[in-house]
Image 1: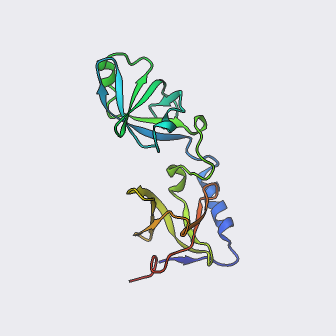
Image 2: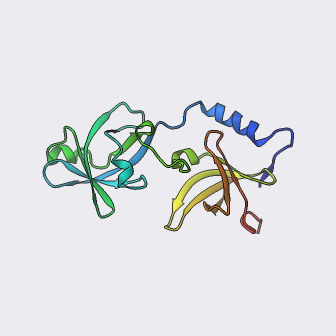
Length: 194
């Protein structure tokens, strides 16, 4: 079921209330990837990247072993290996030390890296309300962002029902992560009831 917003209660005001109830800060420490194995015997680690690419990872001098930025570790080197990154962290010089980090998620401080002006972090998109740009009908909230190769796909949930929408220019018209709103031009049949 979709909710048509009352004309007296605009989406901007509603979103402002939601944003303010969430607090003034977006998630500061973002997931970079997961250490899935050791590499060699000198403490290098294999990192499965959850960020766009290795160039983004190379911007960081410091990474964190927690999502609050309390347990930092200096990033000494990064190099690609197939679809992984081989990294070296300060103080991790043996395979035994590296073994202790297997399975850990690494985080980066969003202030330590730059992204394109028109790009958004997935963590900022999740929780955004999806609204029709013409009618202001609310379609639901982004609960996940998927990618199978050609484009990102937003998983929108409303009342337990999931709808997948492609994040392409013809559909996604405006993204405002500050106010937690994504305005779309719905394709015919996308949100129609069966």
